[in-house]
Length: 83
View 1 (cartoon, rainbow, N blue to C red):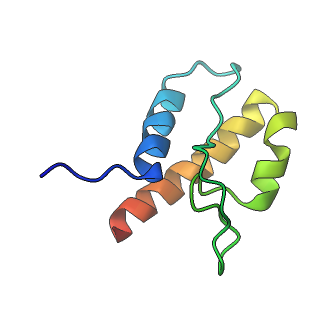
View 2: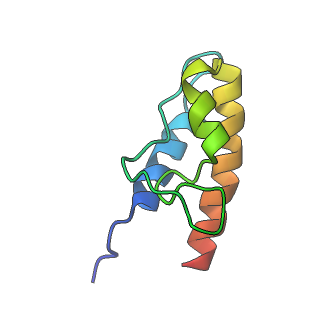
């Protein structure tokens, strides 16, 4: 039986594309249109970003976007360990 797709699968696919995006180029948004904040953590259930990371994304430079994605890569790995 195939695994049920979750927003984290889409997010992981975006993360993998970011890894191949040249430095200095704007990156794809982490948003997967599941915009609900976790009740106990400062983290979106869809994209795993904090409210601050979400608010700053549109104004971020490519380098700042890459920093956010680096943190998200760690969160993605952690979430897949937990599931």
